[in-house]
Image (cartoon, rainbow, N blue to C red):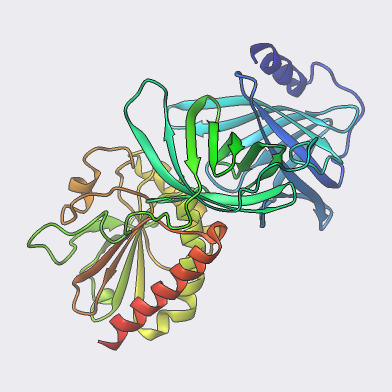
Length: 409
């Protein structure tokens, strides 16, 4: 990988230049090349809109629009719309891209070699007919060999021939849109959205998935096993975060994106149903929830409801956090207040510092539903996004039923 990275940087720096190249329209196959040899594969569709290149990253049914693309001579810079990451690549003589993907984190940049080829529509090559059908629900345990801890999820997949779509659901959300294949008895799934850069592999034997490996990002890696069980369930999202005994109201004041202090006790929120949305611009499931809430709020605010977003960003610096949250809010056309907590999601005392009335913040996003009397009625952890299919539809039904109930009181 080190040699690959040096070559990629040299190409981008212009040490091997040739005549100006133009990005090819159509479907591309892209790869992030990990040092352990595992390639995280995804596809994108490159089109031209108003004469400018625009990319749509393809993950199952999702098409993520990427429109901040700059080309110069024989190089390209692609800025992802979320999660502060980008691609820098040389446009080679054959029209392909070779360069690096960089995640810009508070602790420093992380980079991984990246290549992309135009005209390659497949995600994973298939050599064999499927010897297994992975459709259904699969309780799954992710673990690291030699360690006692494990994490639980439920895989839900739909298979059509060799093609598989699906996701893993957890107590705090889901892994969004996964796409892949069953090749013989080998399962391969991947996704890329700028935050999630995932590859899942496993061997399928009947109703069991064995020898599973989960590759995440640049270096992370876990093993996993799964068994088919249609009755598998996750813990009730309403039981993970609760109010402390004797507490029934929230009490907080944080600055908004303009630096103005906003309190849950402000007149704007009195005698209204209020949803407090806890998340951050770094969080893919928060992205899905924000997309839903922003549209929903515009359609329902006249009914006497308000939404407040509390942003837990990756830095305690107000201005850096504000910039990240503001870009995130602008992308989803958020019109409700977005407040900067100046507390990071990894802070072990984040609950005490921001919402001490809660027993804890055990997942992002978390939604708190407050009635017209100002009392907390329910706390929901996680969000089942559009990649979860029927679970997303169920969420919308339950969400609207709860709001209708609180408004009717």
